[in-house]
Amino acid sequence: MSLFPRVFAIANQKGGVGKTTTTVNLSTAIAALRKKVLLIDLDAQGNATVSLGISRQNAPHNAYTMLTGQDTLDSAIVPTQIPCLSVLPSAKELLGLDIELAQVEKPQFYLKQALQNTQLDFDYIFIDCPPAVGMLTINALTAADAVIVPIQCEYLALEGVADLIKTIERVQKNFNPRLALHGVLLTMFDKRSRLSSSVCQDVRDFFKQQVYETVIPRNVRIPEAPSHGKPVLLYDFKCVGAQAYLQLAKEFLKREKEFVSHG
Image 1: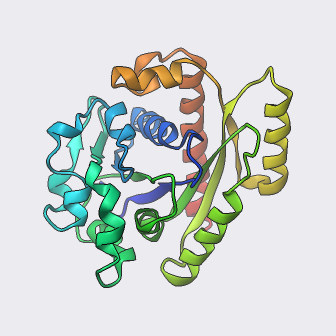
Image 2: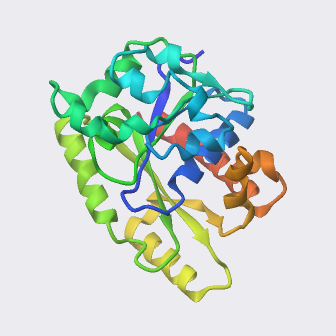
């Protein structure tokens, strides 16, 4: 049992970059490597919840009820079909939570306090952030040890990322000085496309060693999987998308050892 699970926010204010897909499949792959994982779905769209086969209609205890004090964190956690992987489900009510939190004292710390006040039997916690820098994303960054930023290998890939980095720096300065950038993940890579290769190189030139070596390819099995209520590793383990996320999980754990060893 890990008394202090490592917490990661998966964030990019630009939508359609593979943020939720990465949260779901990285969590699944790490659970498959026998680590205990909790996925917190803070996106009101609830795609991570659905991708793990959880119906939001059948999840009365969820991220919204937890953040508004109606439930404790441990009472809202739901096991998934994947051994070692649990989820704190999303709720459509999260859409209005920014307004509710804006009226309370220190709204940035609600998630962090909930995590600190609960004895959690997990090694890692991954938070799927909304595709916007609102109070929910700020809560995730304030609670997190590190951030993972997915960037798609397409035109204007770096658009908005500079703003996200500024947000991370503001959170570091004001709420969470320990927050680090764990890595930048290239997604939707098309090896037949010169543009994909060009964007990939641009991102590596900009972020240097912070970019993961693993690249997630464009693979039809990845977007197909959620419609079956499964991560791609359960839907088609042998496809290139599933294998890429398994490779990412191994690289993530290797990088974790380096983070921890360097304090």
